[in-house]
Structures are given as C-alpha cells and as structure tokens.
Image 1 (cartoon, helix red, strand yellow):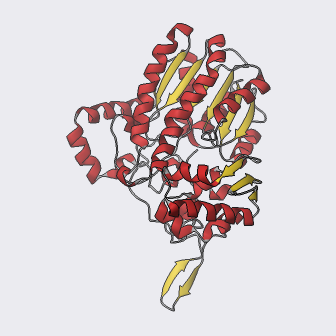
Image 2 (cartoon, helix red, strand yellow; image 1 turned 120 degrees about the vertical axis):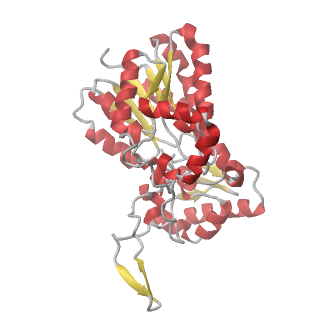
Image 3 (cartoon, one colour; image 1 turned 90 degrees about the horizontal axis):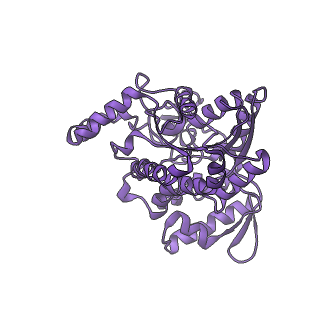
Length: 393
C-alpha cells in the first residue's frame, strides 16, 4: 500500500471512526479526522503524535450548511490530495417514528444520507484523479428494522441502497464504492441514546471493525461484513420477518435496544443523559429527601447545561434536544436566525416552538455563548462544553 495516501474519516471522535483514524495514521496515511467534539479530536491527535502518518482534525457538525465543501477544501489545503472517504458519522433519535417531529426525522436522513452524498459529490474530482475509494457505513437494521430507533433503520436502508447506486454511477471512473455492515458494536453509540447496547457475547469491538474496513481499503472490496456470522444471521432473519419481529419484540436486548433506566427529571444535567454515569447511581453520594427517600447527588452542571436548565421541561415536551442546541455552537462566527433554527428542529414550527427557540437562544446569549446581532439574529461566540453533547458522532 502506498505511503502518504489521504483519508477523510467522519465520526472520528469515538467508536469505529476513532479506531479507524488511529489505524490509518499508524499505517502511514495522512488522516483528516472529522467530528463534533473538539476535545476528543485533540486527544486523538495526541495519541497519534508518534505515528508514521499524520492526523489533522476538523470539529464541525456535518449538517452545518457548507460543511461538506469545507471539509474537502480543508483536506486539500492541508494535504494536497484525497484518496479515500469514509462516511461513518451517525446518530439516532430514539422513540416511535410516528411520534417524532419533522425536524428529528430530517436530522436522521441529513446525517446518514444527504451529508454522505454531499461529501462524496464534493470529493468526486479528487477521487477520479486518484482512482480512490468511498465507504458508506450501514447497519444490520437496514435489512432487519428494529422499532424504537426512529428513522435510523429507514435511513440506513437508504444508505445500503445508495451505495449500490453510487457504485454503478462511478464505475467507469475507477472509483471503488464500499458498503460496510459493521455488525453490533460495543461503543457509546447505543448507550448514549439510552439503550443497554448489545450483550457482550454478541458485540464486536470498534478496533475489530476498523481492521475489517482497513482490509477493505487494501483489497478494494465492494462489501465489508465486519462480523460475518452476524451478517449471516441478519440474512436469515430477513428471510423470516414474522418470526424475527416476534423475537425482537420479546427480547430487544439481542440487538441492544433494551432500555437503560430513564434520566433524572433534569435530564440535561444528569450523568445518564450524556452516557457518562453509572446506571445505578452508585458513584454519587446519597442524601435524604423529605426524611425518607434517598437519591444520588447530581453531577455538577456545565455552563451550557446551566443556560438550558430553565427550559429543560419544555425542551423535552417539544422534542428539542440539547445535542441539537450544542451543534448550533460548533462554528464560531456563525450567524443563527431564529426562524432558520426553529425550522431545522421543528419542521414547520408553531408559535410555541418558535418561542422556545427564541428563549433558548436568549439564554445562550446571556450565558456568553452567543452575541446578539439585530432582530432575532445571533452570532456564535464559543462552543458548548463537551459534557453537554448528547448525540452520536
């Protein structure tokens, strides 16, 4: 394999993406690692400092307008070429699909379908020049959908389909298009969404999946089944949908969607809300409430969480997530318009949703995260703290 080839990996701040970025850097690749959590990306750079390759990072929400073009432009500016694009970033909006807002549904398809296509389109010229490779990371739920994951299974089914379509369209350009079925992986993706995650005897480790993807780079594979026996089971389950649906309704833990205990009422400040606390609260000291009940002490709130605390109840009722709010603050200098922000998370916002948007942005301005810029417009001053992020990267 050539030394110095350039690879973009999205979702590189944790899980499969981080493991792949590390492996690539240590194998001599020049890596552009993309994710939302800047402190995780900086840690990744430190870990890879002694690698034979190199690693640069971009901290950005992929759904930010212009993000795909910016990522490719920055990669070419820093490295001068692009050989491989790995569309790995993902997230899940938990809950019944019929109860989710247009904004939540749109976010799923933006993250998994629209952004990867835009990144591929922006990369096409360089990939043609270098006879490069594009990876689309799918999921077993693309073939066997699981209830409770919102639009995630539908979005991943679209990913599986679009990988084949893109492959047909770029075949004459000698670009390899690879679809990855990662299997059930032991990462924070499911636990941060409020699920237990797959049982240990099933779950693959991120570094194992990253190795399979890396092998797919070397072999120019069109399909990578990271855990072949799981893929075989998925195919069997797909062939008998009635039996599969019955089994999964009785034993959701098989695919990792058994629920963890719900977050505390002030979920924005709870350790459970961002996946960092223990499920039984045993890591907190206990104190008496009304002389009879005991609850764990709360984790200290970050300034971002403090800014949103007064709106926590309304945000839960109207399905405005703290992760979405945090994503608005990723790019310093970015202008936020109340109408545009409310449209993004609520679809067709009513007066209550628009009012909540205004109140949240005002609180962020009062806390120093935004500055006011005219009527219903704000400019991003600084990013949210890492502990406030609740979505997958």
